[in-house]
Image (tube, rainbow, N blue to C red; front, side, top):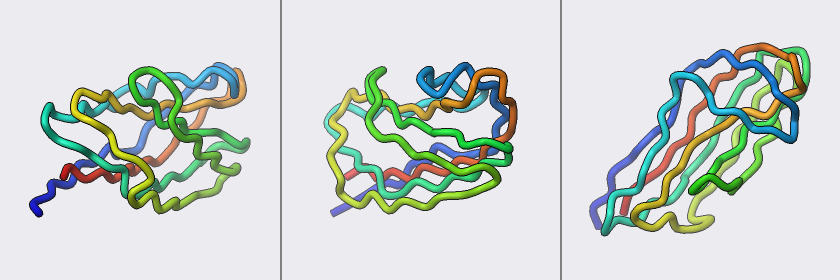
Length: 115
């Protein structure tokens, strides 16, 4: 079976709007699963350089799919092998939820595979 890896990754600044308000990340583009293909999230790694807890939210088609809390000045690695399929046409993006007014830097790496 042929598979193609895809990644949403980079180092990004953020400005918190509230832990209940995940905000888009400037400069991080989303991913749309091509028609006729199924994709699966394989892992998520993240780091938080801020002094307070933040939460990275994996969104699918504009709705929260998974939450990844990252402690102050902490990191997280979550294996996601075959948690669920993302069918063709699904739009995936990462957002940051942080306390209002908190600014900082987040390191993100979401690995996906198209099968």
